[in-house]
Length: 306
Length: 295
Image (cartoon, rainbow over all chains, first blue to last red; front, side):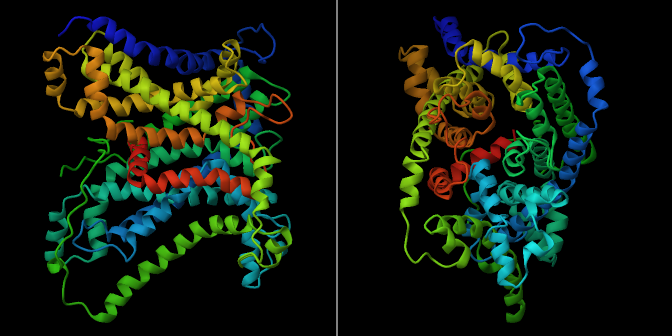
């Protein structure tokens, strides 16, 4: 094209590429490298120990406990989030019928309100729900009191103080904050479905429920797949919610440890073990990749052209 | 994780209002009440569940503690604004707020500048290795932040970017680059080629063409990605927690997500800017965030 092309390309790419290489790519690579060492993070020297960190990891019952909690959450959160999100998306657009049927009254307002929790900082959501779950006049306790139920009778320490309940109480918060987001994602998908299909179905006398299962759902499959992978990877993390609400990022495991919080504690608490923590992080990466691959495998269908 | 044929486009016209003709006219009045009423019950319930905790926290922030306990759902008898003054001054939340504004403003500005420059070159200039660089940015979107966090502390310490705000800005920008470059590359590719060519014929250089022709054209994409990064950087938790640890008793280097503790007024102060941005840029926020999932 014109002269000065090469200097232009270099000046425009170099700053972004430099920052990216130094602060993103190199730490990722080092993370995997450190996982093969016994580095504590404070001493200047360390030695390579091969797969020893991984070997201790698979014998570490605390880690398996954390993995188990991740797995429990992986069953509950995606279903608890995506089913209501799909239901609300179709109610607000009436089965995604692109205008052949109207959404419920006030659909636009509901859409804005449902999305609110998604824009709040996760830490704020976590602290807010600490107040909600509080045993000292928390919202949940007050609401139950209004219908004459004493929360302290069956949960003397509150939802966050009871080991068998804490994980589910936090899972609810995760669901609360993301239903609106996935609803908006599904509405966007539904709007891409051509209206003619619904008009044809309406002429054939299809009910709204049949339209949803026979028209909307098959054509929304791609969006649904993406949503499952995305929510799955987010559920593998959950660090901010858990470290604030269960206070186990820094102190100890109060029955709700997941891989991320245990990793953080292993790396940054008093008895710091960077090598071991990096092995955990590498496993987290492996699980993320497996999760994505598995989801696409299980939900694979022929792509419908429309 | 590319699955969909097209990423969400910045502007999509909403489907035109459809004439009532398609609605079946043979329904009973009663059936209509039911078909409107039952869905309303579900959506109203969820709306209440979303709003109730937020309103409760808001109202509580103006009450005394005993009032919160005695009459949880009533408006306060006296509005106590001093909780906000206390939070802002005594608990130092004013300082955290200004720190956050500084970090996020610089962070979003430099993210937009660097990512639009890189994206433009990747979208419009063919050169050996351009695909490789593009895929290198893609990889960064899929890796969990936790894998990088441990070595990142050492990198930041070695480069003097540990425990200070400019360091935090640089690292926010670095981690915002992958998605922003990816999104803006697609955006620049969608702009017509002829405009840049016309500018070249009129004698504009590469730099002038970018800043005076292409950048203004890319405004819708820049707004989407700017809003996306504003929310992401404002809400960032793990990076400041690990990299911006306390330096003095006043915690004068903290950002909002680090220093809120148990202050109700502080929660509201941290919530308002993001809710305001969402309400003003509603479409842009939804597009930016959902495009993040559809990457």
